[in-house]
Amino acid sequence: MRKSLQTLHNKKQSPKPKSESSLSSAHLGQLGFDNSSLANIIFTLSSGNIIMVNKAASKLFGYSEKLLLTKNKADIFDITESNFKKLLKQQAIAEKPSIILTGIKKNGHTFPCEISYAVFKNDNGIEKEIISIADKSQSILDQLNIDLKKEKIVSDNIILAKKNQKNIDTKNQKIVAGNIVIAKSKQKKIDTKKEKIVAKNIVLAKAKQKNIDSKNQKIVAENIVIAKSKQKSIDTRKKKIVDENIILAQTKYNDEKLNYENIGRNKVLDEVEEHFRIIFNLSSDVLFDCDIVSDMVMINDAYEKEFGYKRTKNMIALEEWAIHIHPDDKEEVMKGYHRILKSKTINWKKGYRFLRRDGSVADVLDSRIILRNSDGKAYRVIGSLHDISKQKVLEERLEQEIKLKEKDIAKAARDAKDTERLDIGKELHDNVNQLLGASRLYIGIAKHGGIDSEMYLSRASEYILTAIEEIRKLSKGLTTNNIKDLGLCAIIENIRHDIMEVNAVKIEFKAKDFIENSVNDKFKLNIYRIVQEQLNNILKHAKATKVVIKLLQNKKSVKLIISDNGIGFDTGKAGNGIGVTNIKSRAASFNGNADFISQPGNGCVLTVTFSASDKFLRRA
View (cartoon, rainbow, N blue to C red):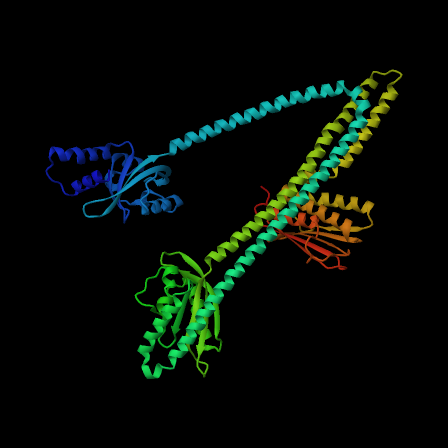
């Protein structure tokens, strides 16, 4: 194909009389190109200019063939998207798969298209590229319609399932009513057994959660220790190599300096350059030696390896060096460098950005030693340029892994709570529903009158009172609907009153600046769980007589502050308890931070801070 297209293009440029055999390849290639149902375009590879199009291409992009020949790739494709950059890389390594790009029509409308391409050279050695373009708009629309149909089927199935479930529930209620007399004699044993099962499940869930939290904390701690240990070893080795090379270079320079007046400047520079080439090229870091008088910098081979700049000699001008400093950092770096030369300082370190030859940016650490004469005037600077880009990436990756582990811990804590609430919900359905059903049955019998009506009403009353007691016990942990209906501040007020009724502690709650409608219900529930957890910690361990809860909000943050006058604890000691871990995990689940300030005998202040601009907080 490459050969036929090359021949075709050469024929279009230099028309000659054609024999029957030449028409069979070039003419057929031209016919295939022009009459293809796909849009075909030929570009000059280096400039991206269009040099040949077919009718399908003209129709697809909305240009006349003549006008389309005046365009280039940037006019008909979105060259800013990642797939276009991927295409350029594939061309560079001679790969030829198909790829999806965004096309741009004459009227400015964009559309998805699938292209395949081939690269060839003409007789003059100029690289050209032919691409075939297929409009994928309709196939994507078809797939969207299929997805919508699937969603409708799923929705219909859900409605049908709910209807079936409703029928099943109705039947189950009838069965429960029919068996209520038999269930009465067995109810006590069933209740006792269920209580044991619920208690056992709660204990088991808490034990599992504690093990998960301990393992996650241990893994995070071990990863941090390993990462810090590795980084410390790397930094130590690199610093040792750089220091040794700098000391060796300085020693050699001082030896050469003694011969400077007798041998002459040029000969000394030549010999010093040779010695530096041998010494410096032993290091993977960029090492340099700057003569302040001439503003010339001697630099090792690592400079070319790290940054890609070719050098004819090991000696470059300071200006050539400085031109590659990132424009946003250059002024500050050069001012700092010249300022340090005028001072008495002999060491200087500076982090900044350095441009590589390929246009990418490297984060570097510049470490320099300033050599001064007896008058304190600087005459030479030697040092190293260390690429810390990879180190920064590793640090960012480690930080991301730590945050991910913290979120995993928070999720595990929430899952345990949800499991516990699910068990309580089942208890409401299986136990309380039966009690209320039995009560309804007795009331129905009593309505018919008779000598036993009072007895039936009495039993119905007993069952109702038992159901009320069960609901009262269980409802303490089910606050999601109350958060939505009453609001966060009202729920905190309720728990404050409940605790003070049975405990010798005074609790104050202040939320003057908090705006309920500005945050979503999930976030308010998370705040409530933190309040519950900390109040539980205070009641169990702090022996406090006064607690103050503050809920603050401004344009920048939402803060929850809980302080007490209890016995406090040592925050520096590891393993402060699952309660502290749960609070930190809940804060992290909404990108917040929980900070405990406490000392033995001085009470405790918990401050939980969230960013008010975080999308997880805002009401949808």
